Length: 277
Image (cartoon, rainbow, N blue to C red):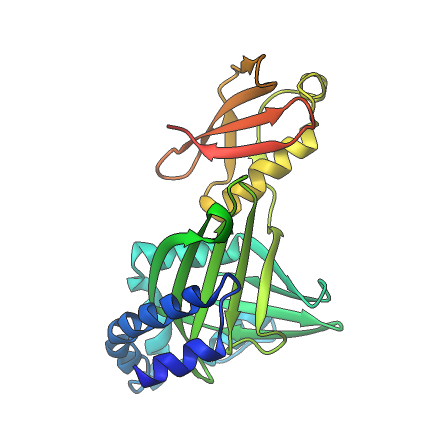
C-alpha cells in the first residue's frame, strides 16, 4: 500500500480527505486487475502488421500508431464499465485554468489545447473501479479510479462527480498523464442531443425556453447516458399547481431505452432531469 498511499497524498480529491483515502483503496484493487493486461500491452508488437503512414492520416491516427499493437488490441476486450467510462469522457468537453485550457476525448486519443497548440495522446484503459459515498452537505460523491496506458507509460486517473442535495453537479478529471493541466472540469456536452418536445410557445408557457430544455437534457445525458443521441418526448405533461412545477417524460435511444423525467420550475425556470422510477 506504500505506492497507493503516496499517490493518494499527491492527488487529493476536491471533496475532503476521505475521498483521497477512498481513491487509494480503489487503486490497490485496481492495480491487481491491471497488471496482467499491462503485461500484454508491453508484449512485442507484430512487426508485420505495421502499415506505412500516408499524408492523409489524421493527427489521431498518427498518434495512435505510437501505441503498441498489443495495447490497441485491448480496446476490443473492454468491460462494460470501461466502455461506459470511455463513452462518458468522449461525450463531454473539459476545461481548466479559467477555461483557457481544454481537453477532448474520443475512443482512442485525448487532445489538449492551450494557446493555440494541440497535444494528441493515444490511450487505452486497462482497468477501472467505481464507488459511491456520502459527501459533505448531504451531497453524493461517485469516484472512478482507472489506469490508462500511453506511449509514455501507465498512469492512474481519477474521475469524480459530486451531486448536491439540490441536484447540482460538478465533475472533475485528474491525472499526471495530462500535459497541459493536472485536473480538468466538465464544462459541457461535446455534441448536441437531439431533443423532441414542446415548441417555443409551449416552453415559454411553462416558464422556460426550448434552448434551455435542450441544454439541460443534453448536459445530463452526457454525464449519465453518454451513448444516447436522441431524447423523445412522450407528448404528455403533468402540472403540480401546489408545487409550481411541470414534468415532461422522455425516452432515450440508448441500448436500455432509458426513461427520464424533466421537471421545470415555473417560478424561476430551473430545470431538473432524473431517471424515471
